[in-house]
Length: 405
Image (cartoon, rainbow, N blue to C red; front, top):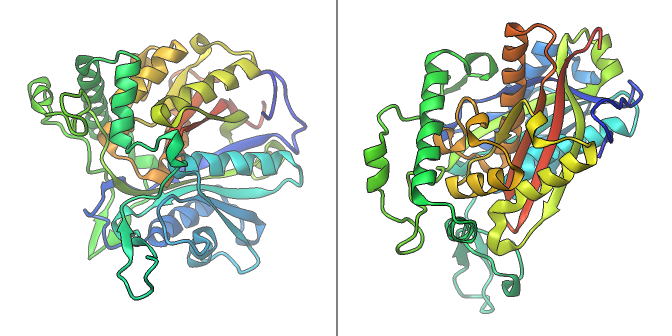
């Protein structure tokens, strides 16, 4: 926790604040961005963040990046150098699977709170399209390697269900009906379609060039999706189950990152506004019910800050599956209508390590929109994500004007 009460302020030289947040288009894996590796997705975002904020290359203290299925080798360092940052700027890659992007931002927040007035680039990236194949060695040195689709997340005695099976476990355990799941997923698509049509996403997207084409829009939201079609999707993971391809997210390629620094340094940089970081928390839960992890982390975070769910103005939650999103919101006592105002991962896609940073990017954009309509409005904003292996991370922010805060 960084501050115990929403009104409590750390010393300005230690109070973390996010002053900029950008992302790439979020595109289906093996689709429009399939030729771009993770560093190719991330480097343009890092470069654009520096241009937007006026932070000098040598002023960056560190680059902290989340990544879940890459090839290792410290991707953050690689992407920083590809972005043109000097060799003196280090990089750190974080792996907490789906939570990696949000946890990278949380870690950078804590580094700011430790002192030094540093400026950090933090976020996440995933190129599922170019992720390396994974294999285990067999006992026979001359035998073929044993390729596998995903890593094991916990010892077998704890249960290690596939994500779709875990979503069915949550739906059954918390009585989340098929109808509620389908309605929630359909709403996500409708909101994302409407937001795209209104140009809502344009200011936060860094276009990418690949194969002679400029990709500048998300390709997931489906305007043609109707309730009747949703109802026809069969169970995707468990026979007779309620989790379908229609109420589950799809894999996506994406990158997102933020500039995070101290309130003092932000003012020196001339930043007009930002998300003040109030606190972050990560919780562990039963791996069989991994989808509920976000709500446990959020409950602890709210309690530690002395906040009630009804005080929240904005909530962004990674919609890996409608069942787990609804179960978490029910547990928190948050109305699903108030969450993911411009749609979520069910419509936009889930870029694993990038997704947590996408949540923060969306919160800053939404808070700025509210402030335009209601000048001076300080929104309380929550980002949360459930994580493979039975975990969840949540982060709380307060949007504020910085020069007269």
